[in-house]
Image 1 (cartoon, rainbow, N blue to C red):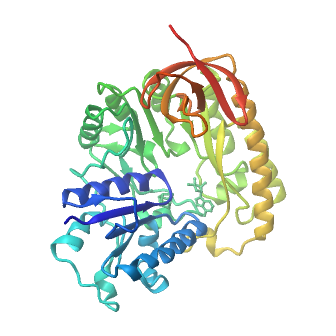
Image 2: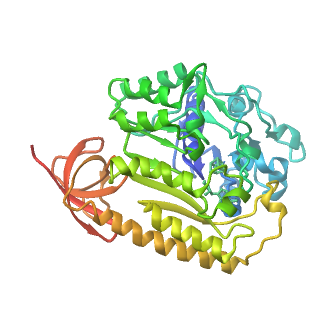
Image 3: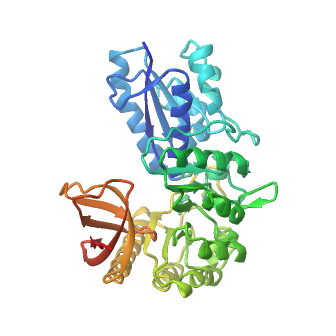
Length: 441
Ligand code: 5AD
Ligand code: SF4
């Protein structure tokens, strides 16, 4: 009888890709997927460390799942991802039901540990149960993520980060930048396209820093756009410093690349950006946005912002609000600052209380919500191509999909199905959501 695995994924898209990579490794070894915890023998928790809350919620979830171990004591709990790398053996002390802790550069050893020479889990033999540490050579060449989606897929092209933003734990849990060979990336996209995937999202912690034997990120985008069947290309998460002229030219001239850029601003104060070691000024950032919106006012722009960074004064925060007004992002991920162990900023005593940080975050969210609504209303009267994702949960005759600029659109259709590209006339905005009607040509 084959073993069943279940993977619980936290955090960013990089983790979603890695979960699919682990799934493919497990299936090569005869395992079968399940979503039913009563059936699972191997429980994977692919975790995030970016904020304290992400770690707390993963730990709480793992502890809650202990219940299944009481009934079926042979099952294994395996923690992977950033929290595995961050806490290593400490995790075994903190959550007593964990069997293995495996960091992001050690996934190739999963089959060895679980199937070839299964380590008999002795409670005190922590060394054999914790596999962490960086391997600059580990790019998972020849391992491809399981394709679980019918038309859209992530493909990781770059891992790690060479920046040292003062708030960020990522370099400590993912190590230095490394880039997958372009041929290996292209092979994965070609195979995905043969399986019906038409939308590809390239992933990396600093995805646009990609370089490999003379191929830079812009070159790679062009190569991917030439693969038959690929109609939409997206990428996450870039760093503003690597928006070169060449890259911007490619983004604007290759039709398969979606007119959407996620560009993390983090703060609208130069003093705070400097303290964050972001290596750009607000003006540099705005100039990048202007290049996109100057040519295409509908270009989708999204961002990440941290409210209440250590040392952020009232004036710094007001500058962030002003920058958000100026930038007119379509959407933003906004967070209250969370000090992370080992980072430079965590060594400084926080200057704001939790309430003050939350209050700033709430003001920021309120402002961005009003801008999102305004930007969505500007779409009324336009015709957009929608990639259909799923039926609407409220009405099975209605479909939900996204524009190239990453806006959600709901429309009624008797013929649409997931994976279709449907031209829609945008009629109205209900709540936040655009609503349209298909255009028959
Ligand atoms: N506190 C709050 N937010 C953070 N982020 C990264 N580190 C922290 C932190 N210590 C946010 C940044 C980043 C996003 C993925 O998470 O905005 O772009
Ligand atoms: Fe979280 Fe960052 Fe790790 Fe992604 S890379 S899972 S966002 S800590």
